[in-house]
Image (tube, rainbow, N blue to C red; front, side, top):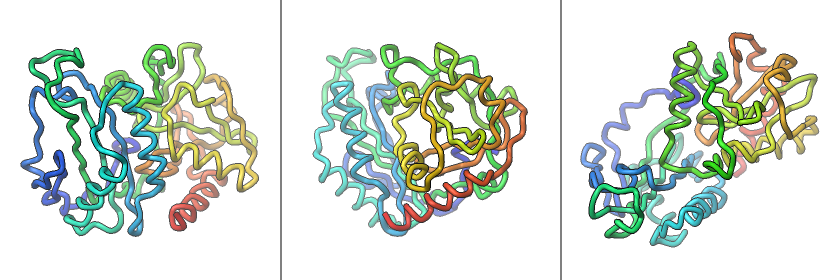
Length: 298
């Protein structure tokens, strides 16, 4: 397994076109300047989107999250929402894509006059790159689930680095993942500075104990759109839900667990720190079925 982002290989991706500042170029020729702010300092925001049966799922929510992230770091995207969506649609049409596609929309502050973290060194407009790939989760994810290991790297508070910001800079999350991989796990479970369960390194975390779905309060995890859908589905389906602070001790009562993300949707967890869980558990299975219906109707 290769974590929550494990995918089923697709040879079509070798020849896809990529949108680079509005130009459609072959994948092998899709490049940006070495002076780009994203390359130099991780200065940018991004959004992951999913094309399912001809529709970009929850598009308005994804675009609103991108815009909020750009405002939070005073980044001028330079294009309105309609123009950005038009670029996405042009890319999908050029690649003849209609289903089973994952997209990464990336916006950086743009090219700089010299390597520097100072935004004032920017000399042009924002760099906008859109990558669309034929990309679906590896079937083993749903069948066997993910293994998690608790990392010593902590999820940060909003006054340090706000986890809700989809920043190009992912180093703290990468460090947590590397630690989990050294422990033989697929993904890292991250605690906040107070020692409560906050997030995984690439997805949001839920556990189920005594029939109740439990998750963090949302201030020290990703601003997950799929997370919000899972919470809404619990309420819709009449599944007991508790949102708040949960310590690693509380996980000992878990019968099942799952993570959420745009790419994988709702993915079961097979083990946490070596303790095995039911895969998929009955509540996880019920939520996966409800989510499948939700995206089919979106």
